[in-house]
Image 1 (cartoon, one colour):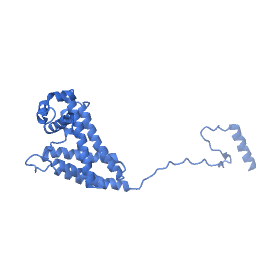
Image 2 (cartoon, helix red, strand yellow; image 1 turned 30 degrees about the horizontal axis):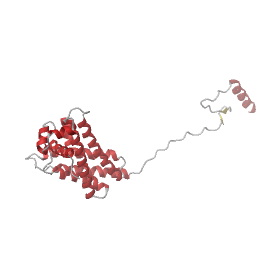
Image 3 (cartoon, helix red, strand yellow; image 1 turned 90 degrees about the horizontal axis):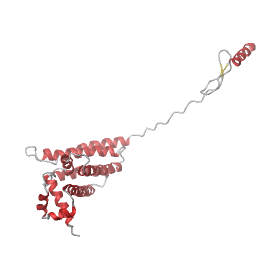
Image 4 (cartoon, one colour; image 1 turned 180 degrees about the vertical axis):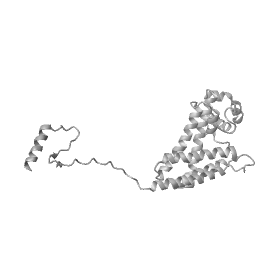
Length: 250
């Protein structure tokens, strides 16, 4: 089915914003890149911000679908798929059109954390973490979300390093090296999680209160009567009578 004019507009805007940024790219640059009329934009979007949000959502859909297809084609076991996520990022970092993460860039350009672009960017990152957490759960780890958060931090750090350092001439010009280093660290995280999952589970059972001991005679000969909370006190005359009775028996 051929793409609609709206889809073509969103696709073009996504490529322009990803390559040149959001604030630096005006609507005219989107129109020129896609051969789209200004009327087409106004027919589908009320503002540039609405177009930016649509472009971000489209990028989220494309990115996660590509990542999951790549991962599933590289490994069948859950652990292997977790590591394949880093292979996917290495390929992405080494691509000619790599311009950093569009969602990180959106967070940098839009200062208001409640703005629509920031919310879409955050949701994209959370969806990636959920995907990692599902794979961690399949591995049988004790705390899948915690492990997924650790792996995601490695991915985010590798992404920024690939853009800031890896693409600069004189630094080796190998953006993929950050993904390989992150993959090595990810192995350590997964190995530790596997060891923790293999430890025996320690179950703590509450201790029961000891039963009260029966009455026993005291050294004076007066039977010992344990006093428990809520029990009525003994009458002093009763105690004296018991004491005289015990002496008369002696």
